Image 1 (cartoon, rainbow, N blue to C red):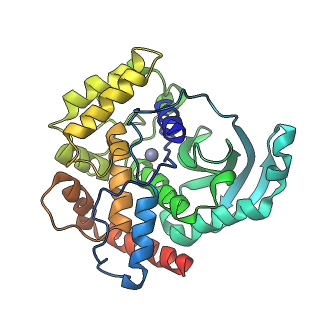
Image 2: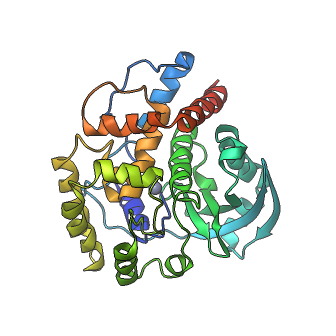
Length: 331
Ligand SMILES: [Zn+2]
């Protein structure tokens, strides 16, 4: 539970640093149907989706959370499939071995490069290895503050042992880049530089004619704008009141509890409770289920959210590529 709490806290420092949890698996969504394709790999895909599941906002029995030690170790430039020009950060002595372990660092990058086709990730310009010890935060993405059309992929090298979990996390993180990069959302330097200025974000949201993602104003034909307008209009006011709680008090537990209650009362609308964090987390989680789950046939909103991506031929193609890469890896 401590890990889950860690995830939640990291998230609320919301700069669109997107994080997934090492959470206890609690199967909730359609486990054992057949995948439409890649059937040889069905079991592996089911395990991948199960690896990331858990009640992250269920605070029952949660321990008091303390921030883990955290350090960036190495920053690489990304050139196509290669990572180059490592830049070594100043780190505590205890982490020098991890910092020097370029083979392990390359392994995590390779896994990402093997599943996400190069042409779909050309906006990722840096690969940054960090650690906060085992568990806690696994991976994240953020806009490069020096060029906000570019993105940085962060991976915790202490967490690459569990390949299923790493894979589902990397696809979730990639989904943020897919749905928030410059072709989808107008990059906004002021927002990047003041990501925790709640009043500024509210002002920007009012000025945006389409959905404002908290990273920028989305284009009207973007994935996130379509997703938001289809699935969020009915619940946006209720959710916004809860989301605002995280800015009202340093004690975030009431916010977590309210968000978890929100999930419980809308559980047929979200693939998991983590998806209630924010619309941008909802689309990233739903995309991850889209990739690793069979195409759902039911009428629930969470199933409609997974089917949403099938309306875009380029995303169906991308799904097939990711599954090919993931299945090769599993074999
Ligand atoms: Zn995320």
